[in-house]
Image (cartoon, rainbow, N blue to C red):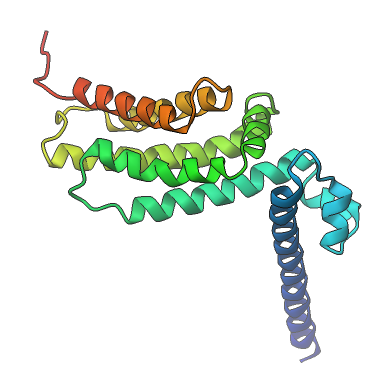
Length: 216
């Protein structure tokens, strides 16, 4: 009896510990989103975030060793939410180019809300540790797989050739976006110019995926 009560107490304690951990993480996320938006990523310090979340900086570092880790975490959450929502809502008969433009439009809206944050994210992603890159790569790979599913629907409609390598097509669709995104951040494009680049890139890719199989 006493053994069972002790086991039950341990389960309750563990549950409470996990709940407290989750609640702290949620506070950190909420505070960071708000302060990054109001002050800007560069002007927000880890001390600001910890104080507003009512935790010590040491506790914050347990969750996120550096401010960049927190930024990548938040952006990852936001992008997964945005792209999943858009991909799930795509009509099955939407042409591939239009489907891609519809999926990426809210992603561009998200970045446009705070281009400083976007630049810090891009810089941090390109010049970061292998561990951080692996975390973000996992999200990117999942997104490319979903884009491949959109392309596969194009095969069913007869829009692209039946032997199109779907995983590679998803990768290339993402590549069109990412190249344009980086040029946008560098100032090479404005938002309308970026949208022209994306549409032309998607159209060119789709044209290359049409026609008869070359059996040489």
